Length: 179
Image (cartoon, rainbow, N blue to C red; front, side):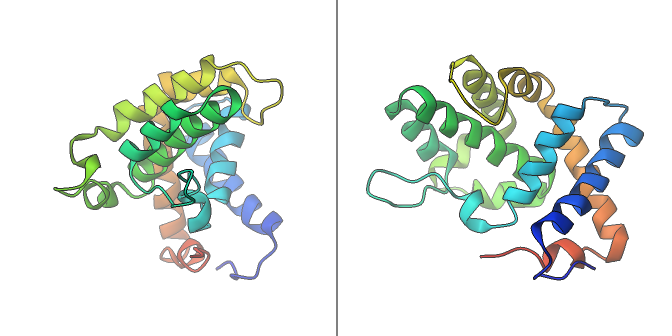
């Protein structure tokens, strides 16, 4: 079990081991830059503030993909790329790690009720990959791979979840989640 106060490096190593095993050994995906990206996604999304990091100009946290898409359309350049990348990350995280939550996130009556998270995630990663920026932590080639292989990445994340649940009943990660 990982302590909630564990250094980020310990958390990163935990996720890196699980992600490398799931993608390399279980799925045969030997792409270090893709695996590293997914590891960092898991590390970032430990914090709810990072899961819901896109904000409207008023400062309101956007928690629906439809609102994030509107916000992406209102931005330009690197800011637009960041929002599209986040939409890809958001949809990949929920469809891969917590697919049972997708229906709750898309409950009837809200803007996301008709949104296909997988299709929007693929599209968002593709759009982000086409927006040129000078410096970015996610190369266009990785975002293109996330777009084209969204389903295998979501499945790989479900394997990561299975591994951590086998590790100690899921408590290692569940105790890390920070609101």
